[in-house]
Image (cartoon, rainbow, N blue to C red):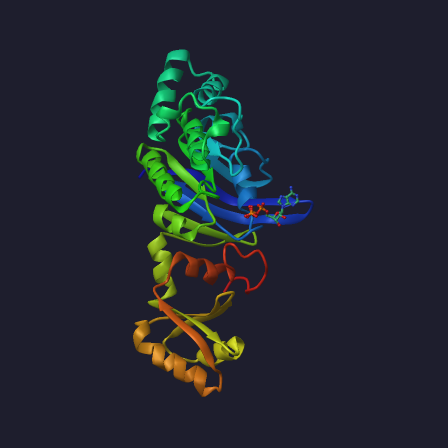
Length: 321
Ligand SMILES: Nc1ncnc2c1ncn2[C@@H]1O[C@H](COP(=O)(O)OP(=O)(O)OP(=O)(O)O)[C@@H](O)[C@H]1O
């Protein structure tokens, strides 16, 4: 992996006085698959829109592939590809025409354009669909076409906003393969996703943003390991009282109310300290409805740092920890 291809320093962005992004700093290394996660309204889109020059830089510094978004936006645009969350294909164009149109728009010379179209359609396995109108493609094929189109200009960084949203599980797995192939061919990937397993599987590193601030950054393994050895999910008749009772137990690192119950992260082998956890809760006269012991997952990391499930739009949990 090379140096930093995305550099964000102290980025702040406000809408009518409301601070959507509050002085965030992070970087993405050349060659990485980097995931940017956060609950709804956390500030992801605002950040990405500044990075891809759709929103003006208000304050801070952002460089993409060495170019400053405020001073050299055209250079930045030449260096990136973007695949948006909502489908933006012309339904009446064929697959090849879609690619052809994009290539012309970017002034790619004819012969190079033709070769590129074939190469990119090959990568996303759409060669056989070359003459199909896009309206007749499946959801997965449409996403692949959008990715192929985004790659035509050989961007150094490809921004993928929710690349697998709405796709069936099998197609999602295939899409992961394509994303990895694109990455192996040398493109840095900046990804947003609501699927924690996706972020976990694909990412070299992940940042989680909440309330306009980055709350943690790390490799999937380091983020999961930092939570502790194991996680216990407890459903009790009084989760608040149970949380209080467990606070003083030595093997308990952290407790947090979540929509799935009380999340207890522990520092030791869970199967060994589970009896003590149960005894302590019952000792307070609290009945236990269910217990679930497991290794920390990216979902647990997300709940730990944001107090919310990714799909949970409400304010069921507490912010931060
Ligand atoms: N154009 C705008 N005018 C006013 N407020 C805005 C605007 N765009 C975003 N916001 C607010 O800024 C905050 C961050 O929004 P943003 O779209 O960046 O979040 P997000 O993390 O992308 O959320 P989602 O996952 O729902 O897309 C939210 O509170 C949102 O309501």
